[in-house]
Length: 364
Ligand code: PHE
Image (cartoon, rainbow, N blue to C red):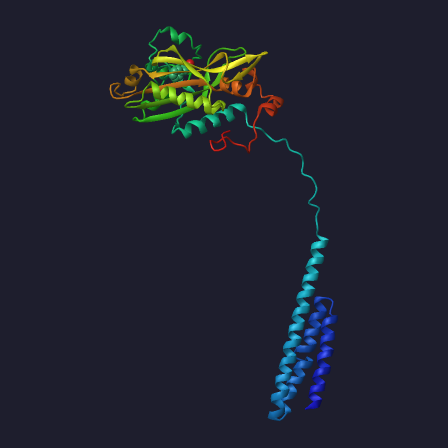
């Protein structure tokens, strides 16, 4: 059937040209209808197959099917290309300039007290201590009596305590409210609540009525407590020596323990670290001078008994130190009062990067 072949060849080029010349989605739809629609050219040829002999129909039918598929594929391809073109066009039109610089924001810093507390937690956590907590508003029992300061004991006077009005709902020592003068209160709170072995630190605010270059009415302390069956003075010395070397990042930092007195420890000691003073500057490390850093001692048997534990069975050590003081020494901050002035320039200078948090892995 040569005429049929010719017709198809002509139709193919005609439809191909029609599809390829379509420049938008409406034109492509028109081309589809013209070729494959109900009254389309290929559809019309399909219909003419019925009039042919079976032989002719077989070859012409197959060829016509190939043509139909080719044109359908071409339409699809052209349509996809046009859709992509339309999308690209739309994206180009809707482009926004994301290179505009953001409003400059002041980046905050971590206060040296928070930084130091995180460092302390990291070092003591590494030694197996857990963090305990206690309230700032305390009573006479937890701040003094249970810690072996009997009523009228002169050591009470040394604490410059802020007293609060008595709590009418409590009786006796529990009614006598005050702002805790030290974190040793948490020794009592822990031992009355938890059976040994105990290995805790606690960090928080403490209050004493005092104000000068090295005293503020509110300051922070860290307290440590270890209670077990055979914890001794050697453990105290080893633990605190390791702590000072890790905290001040001086591996061979000299330390010494001097006898001292606290009502709640026996024996009691103060710990010094080595330093050198030159040209008004202070350097921590081996040198010709010493700096007092903390108070410590073996927990007094009376304190253990006051907490309901048997001092013949349990013993251990405790220590306490001022967080501002060790922060000042480590970071060279000269005046304690500046910690609480909230001066943005001071915070910018002495503050720490919020994204660079202390951990034992990096040693910071
Ligand atoms: N609580 C004592 C103080 O504030 C410090 C201390 C704590 C001493 C634990 C010995 C043991 O001065």
